Length: 312
Image (cartoon, rainbow, N blue to C red; front, side):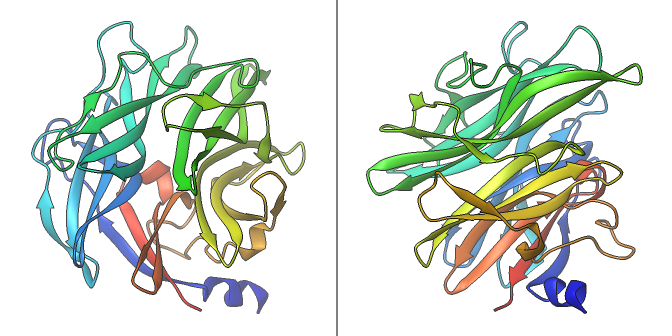
């Protein structure tokens, strides 16, 4: 009964879009979906698609929120492509968050490069700016705006950025270590927070927003935060031993001290659908009085991205 009750918190609308080889750069996946309101009922969703060689580019689709499965537009060229050889985003780019700033759209994105030994990789956070309404983006710099640090020794990735009064706030994924387990490398990362006065230069001091629940957890990934009823509410992805990604939940009154309550996330896997063994990478947006969630399912969004609507 309890599990059924949790599922009723979100009404799943199903898979909205998945690449079917429309373009060489859009061979598979619609990973890390990010919603951006265009006008009226029209939303644009940015996502990362992969080539056959598994290199990711950022593209988008548009839909009417009242009829989301009817795709109105598909980008015929990438908004942002992998960077030059040797740069932090040489092997792929992923959208993570979009902010409207005046006539510009600021995309906080993820860039990654391979490590010497698979699956070792390095990720950092970049900023790209659009001046044509979000069709194309130009890097603010060829280097990241946030990279590894004393608080984040292995990687930084998946930022969620929002303006909170005069302060810019970010939750991001922080790589803490790699371990060799049974001859294979295993990553460990959780969620930390940072602040900024301009959205470009970020101050961090190691504040952990969502930590590992126990020693069976290894990866706590992409977060989405809203402020509602005086509370910061965060949905995120987590991996625990023996299970693939699930979507968890945490709350805070001050953005510093968080209470993790995964059972309150309200969304879980389906019995036999595209999200039957994995739900991950949530992105939240409000339309009028309703709250919506974009997310990925099995195989990290290989089949596409899905939409759910909160039921109160």
